[in-house]
Image (tube, rainbow over all chains, first blue to last red; front, side, top):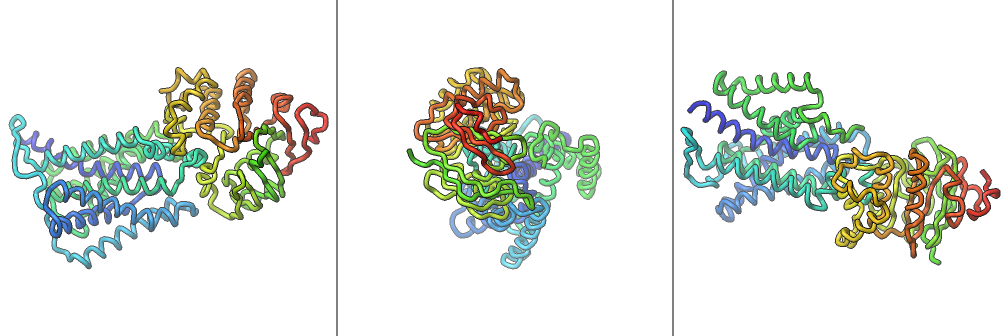
Length: 293
Length: 236
């Protein structure tokens, strides 16, 4: 009973943080921007879904899409404020990181000013039912989280492989200079990337609100986890991020079960440090030679 | 005969370095022009300046009657995609390719106007007719191809859309002579109709008798102009 419960929790956690990590990874490899603004996008999308639920409709699908849409809008805000003005200036990587961190902090404070510190709840989007898998009872919200994030990830991967915009994004991931030669605009591609990754963060926010709550600072932990997963998986690699998300999800679940919740960050960072010492470019960063400039 | 490219007083360079000195160049439609010169005399920089990829530049560049040159001091590549969309196909020197994409995706990425994207199947067929060896490599990542095959991919990519001006930068560079010759032959067999082609090359023999005229390039200036038949008059 215990072990299977841990497994379920690990998978749920891995799904939510994995979404953020894949978003960070894609942004970095295609735009060269380490976007720390997802902390803000995350809370922003959570409040977007909350407001929609209070004011317009509480239909689960509409609330979730409202969260995804506000997430995409949040991504576009970061694109307009940071990527467009900074992307061709010297030291873009460092500047972009600082600017997005600033947006994350300022944005969270603005949300705090407007909505106050009291946590908000979203309705149960997936209803109340349970499934018995062997000897463990899985509640509806967990199944919903796993299914939704896998569907979102599949849609993103499929879109990146199949569509013309996806082809442009992948081309820019591999060789930004050659991409401009074949007529791919850095700025317009930036908009697509930021909207898409923002939508991913938005979905993650809606999903996390099913187990936790929505607050102005609820995006900070997913951001930290997302960045560490993206680093561990090798920045720029989607499959690496997925593998790393599963590994860190299991460490988190195992640690909180056997050592206690307060040790979660410690074991996670120890694990990340160990893996990065052995593989400095992350789990699947070896074959990924993109962005070596 | 319409003017495809009209360059006036073009200077360009990188940082404090000035590579091109007040160039003038006119290319008419249907023309195939060779630019011959040694390494480091500005052939690639001329192409980059036309595409807006140099560090800075000034002077007028008219592509098919539209001004694409501007006085710029920074931000190379910022307007390149717009210039390219106005009808410029660049077949860059060396490996400006996307290692992880397959040959097919590569050719698709060259079809960036919506009109050429819709007709990309026929266009790919046309490119494959020219570069027959690529046909069985369509699903292979480009990073695994040989040098000659990569060059075919990068030239084929340039042919995927209807450009006004094709810029081929040293298509035979670094290839075995036989393969270089076949790549060059393929390039010369492309029907230009109302577009034009500019080929940079170090090896005059490859261009001789095959292009409409040859221009020499020396120390950032265009020197002497000759029809390909009379190599003696080249001021190299």
